[in-house]
Amino acid sequence: MKYGSYSVRLLKRTQGSIWQARLKYKDPITNKWKETSKMLPEAKGKREANKMALEWFNSMNEAASLAPEASKEDDRTISEVVKTYLDYQLNAGEIEQSTHDKHVDNFERNIEPYLGDISFYHLDRTSIIKWHTELSKKGCSQRYIYSNYLIIAKVYNYYVEIGELARNPFNQVKITKNYSPKITHLTTKQMEHFLSCVYAEFDGKSKMLVGILLAYYAGLRRQEICGLRWRDVNFTTHTLSITSAIGISNKGTYTKNPKNKSSVRTFPLIPQLETALKERYNEIKPEGNWFVVGNKTEYMSPFTFSTYFRDFVIAYNLTDAYGNRITPHALRHNMASVGVRSSMDIASLSKMMGHASRAMTLDTYADANKDALIVAADKLSNTFKTEGDFLETNEYDRDDAPSQENKEIIDEQFRLRGIISKRTTTLLESQALSKGLKIAQKAK
Image (cartoon, rainbow, N blue to C red; front, side, top):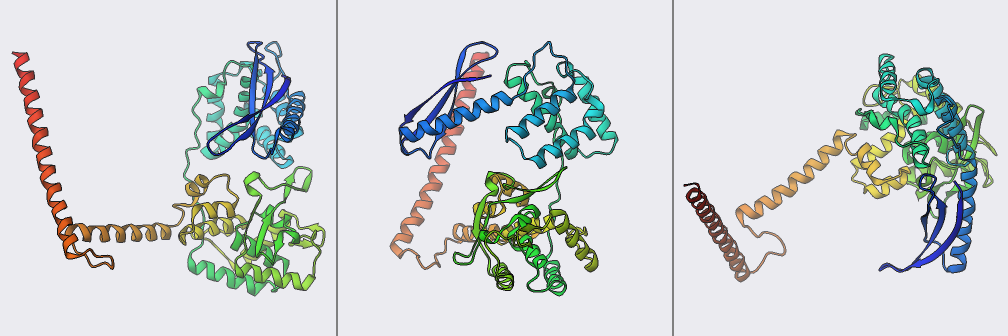
């Protein structure tokens, strides 16, 4: 599919005007021209909007040229089509090398042995159910099966969108992520013990100490910890910026952008973390492009960081609230749980964590720690108690208590509400009785 032309127009809205870019393309099914559009909020004028629209037009045509094509006469297998599509996503920049390799590995391990030799266009519901059953027999969790389902289902969705398939066969089978994830956290005593062990094991200026505290106090992922540079630490504004990470692929590790758009973030440093960073900074006096957890311009591999961390945890026998060995990612979960428990607003917590949405933060961590529920229940109880006392006793012991005259007026209002409520009830009862008599008369 190729895009034929582009145009821009100014949309006037109540919040202000905004430029919109439009691309025309020929529908492969109906052979009719259609349009797709994109908002350009950064455009300041028509010239800038045209420039941005042209860039979008070229990038879309470039992606379209890389896109895999097929025809119903093409009898390629599922293995051939899926791998071609994943390569296309990588080349078009839609996914990172690490994501590509992970999807290919999962496909070759969990999908290809069961569905790989089937013709892409002839996959049916029975074959999908059989595949699901075989993975279940192997002991795969529903969550794991669902993650593999997403890999192949999106390929079929693509071919439906370009008109090569009428429907996605996976839509005929209900495969849900029916699981209740147990989000780990540390109890207050475990947190205190963990920190005491960290400072006992590592020197105050150690890169491992800083790396662990970045996970503990800021909730950074291990790839973000290893990809953090000193230019991302601002002691003047007391902020930390996440602008890069270390990717993991079958070919090794590499520097890359963070996990997703929302993972690029800037947030305040808490004093405990800033102090540790300053001590290491003053010790090594780094240049801006040096890695915080690494050797000058050489970053520490996420695998190496995990190995050092694992050895430390085993040596001190450190476990979480569920008795499991603590991992770097467990510290990230704990930081979010502490945020919820401390009544931190979800918008700020979500930004610090680099989540795609506030809903993700709420769904994942809102009930992760029973302490948070206890605090919420206490607040709710106090609110009901305060309101209940006012309604039941009609006492005015607050600073803004009304005068005696106003108090009498309010009491009269409550009395009238009761009378009106009784009259309304009586009226409704009369209407119902009247209606019932009419129905009875008609029946006769």
